[in-house]
Image (cartoon, rainbow, N blue to C red; front, side, top):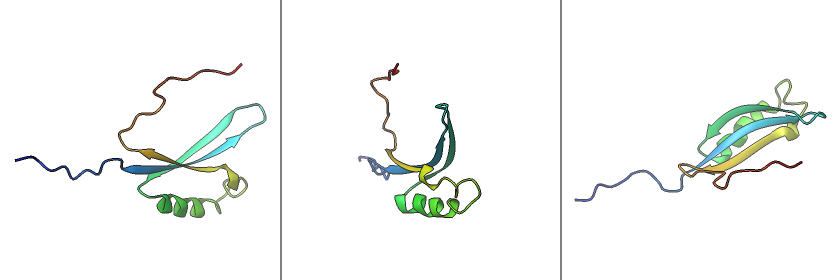
Length: 81
């Protein structure tokens, strides 16, 4: 008898973070959480955007979608001069 797998393939997760880019090219990145739906990530974003610091830079929020157990950057990376 074949064992059934209850794990859903291509399960998506959503990362919420906030990025501030400074004039000297450096960045300040604040990781806010990992969520099972984009709606849950947006709810936290809406709660955070009224907080001190975040409310002054609302455009810094980013929600990225990833597939669980799928690797990224599989071809490496390079630098721009």
